[in-house]
Length: 94
Image 1 (cartoon, rainbow, N blue to C red):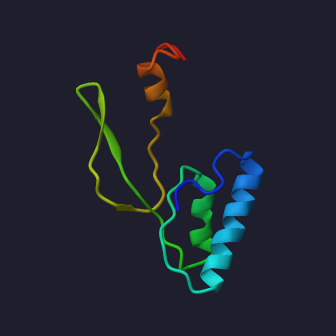
Image 2: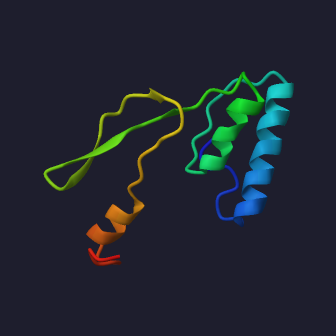
């Protein structure tokens, strides 16, 4: 599943996604969930069957690049401000 309940408010999205994931686990489902919601990473503490992995990005020649390898845990890097700057939404002083 990709971005569960995308387009809903944050609280409903997080609550609903957690409920759905727990229900799927209870029913023996196996699968992958793709999300940018860091709060969902907390499920791995509550439910040991849940494992977190992420893709890692880096900057090379002032470009955002990805290594396309799965790394354990929740991502610790951020790129939204860089992307907003590159799109001209914000300037370098923000």
